[in-house]
Amino acid sequence: MAQLIVLLAAISVVFSLIAFNGGNAPIGVLFAVVAASPIIFLGYAVVTRKRASSDTAPQLTAGRRKGRTIALRVVALAMVGSLGYGVYWVMFEPKASDKALGRISDLDAGCAGTMARKYFPKTAEHTGAGPHPVAMFTVSESGSSHPAAPAGGSPDYWSGSHLDPYRVQLIACLDSPGEAEFLTDCKFTSDSLKLYRGTYEVSVYEARTGKKVGTEHLLGSAKPSCPGMVYLKKDVSKLHTEPEFADYQQVLRKYVEQ
Image 1 (cartoon, helix red, strand yellow):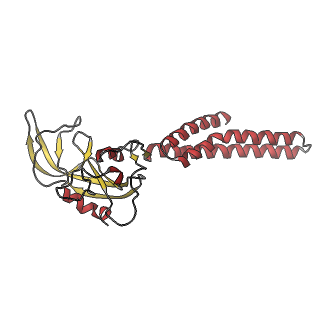
Image 2: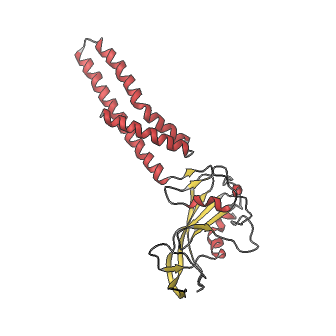
């Protein structure tokens, strides 16, 4: 049991450092306390042992020994529970980013995979009436993310290229596409690929906290328009249309303009 507690304490120190570096001070403090708990328990054990050595009642000494055993088990269970939450936090919760923001594309880590997703504490707070400036990102056929460009003449708060990234309150992330109806065959120099209408799930997060505020679904364009050139991920043999700007507006307007 003692070896287990020492191991858990060492892991708690690692999680504490990760939490502080990730901008989550309360979790960092929690794991610092968990890491210190074996020392606290040892202090408790020394004190009770000294009391027991001056005690002539055997049954009282046995009772204190039982109390130490119970305390040791409680400490171990608390450490296991805290570390379980630590694993969840490291694996699934977004981490703070201190990256300097110069343009909308610098917020793309807000749409990264589960372990790599970031939030940006220096961006605007998501509060009050709209508009709530949004940075929108889609995923190309190569698997890389890129900003979704608004239609000409649209207000900058719709992910415009001149939007100050520190003003952004929301980040909208499209997942990898599924497919609806077949549209056409796209012929390239050395190959031909089938083009399908894309289907997407879009997740909306607060830029400042990483908190999810909603999930929506939308379709790619129904136009059978083939790209002039495309980069594909390995083993990908089909193409999908991306949503048009009006599609984004239709599903995201309630988050952005209200």
